[in-house]
Amino acid sequence: MEYDKILARLTNHASTDLGKQRAAALKPVGNFEEVKRRLGITDEAAKVIRLKGSPPFGGIRNVRDSVHRARIAGMLQPAELLDIANTLTGGRKVKQHLQQVHEEDSIPALAAVGEGITDHRAVEQAVRSCIDDDAEVLDQASPELAQIRREIRTGESRIRERLESMIRSASVQKMLQETIITLRNDRYVIPVKQEYRSQFGGIVHDQSASGATLFIEPEAIVAMNNRLRELRLREQKEIEKILRRLTEEVAGI
Image (cartoon, rainbow, N blue to C red):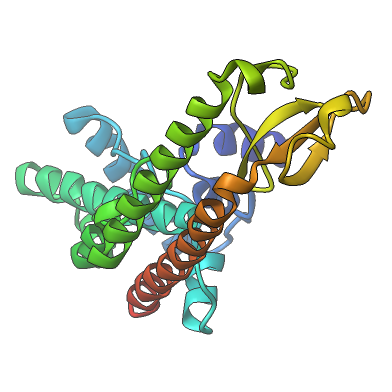
């Protein structure tokens, strides 16, 4: 019968990773009543597709490992939390899809499956209020985070203004490889020609492959960069608090 080929074709039709796993693990059944039960479910599935189209499986992921880690006090990352929110949304939509079909034409077995899908809209909303579709933590995730990020943006703007003022100076321009501002080790620096190192005060953070250019943090902005570094550390701590709070929400589903 080339059963493995049948399973392979079935697996290719599955819309989710979990569905593919279940399809690939199917074994032949010798019990007649069980065969009838499964064929009945297959008939119901065909009815669903005929009446309302395929259920909306978009966004559903295999999040078992992430949920398990949440339940043993791990801390989930933004991408994991977003996958969980998308999966909860997807499950809710599948449930609604099956309910709508069942109201029009009885599909008792699949309706029972749909009833088994629990609604965790509060968790979905908690995640979406803190994490965007690119898995980035939003400013609005907490008042503290919003304040820290405002201070970071202000600090960055002031540093850039100070450096731009410096690189516009004719006396400084001659020492620069390029009149640009860049980052090294999360600190704002400017590219200074090696031969002017002794004349240009500040901290060297890097150099070019040829050694002709030094990336120097001018003394005038060291304190400003230090303050920015402190703010970024506070930002990371606040993000961690937010992620732990969301992880606790997930642990309860």
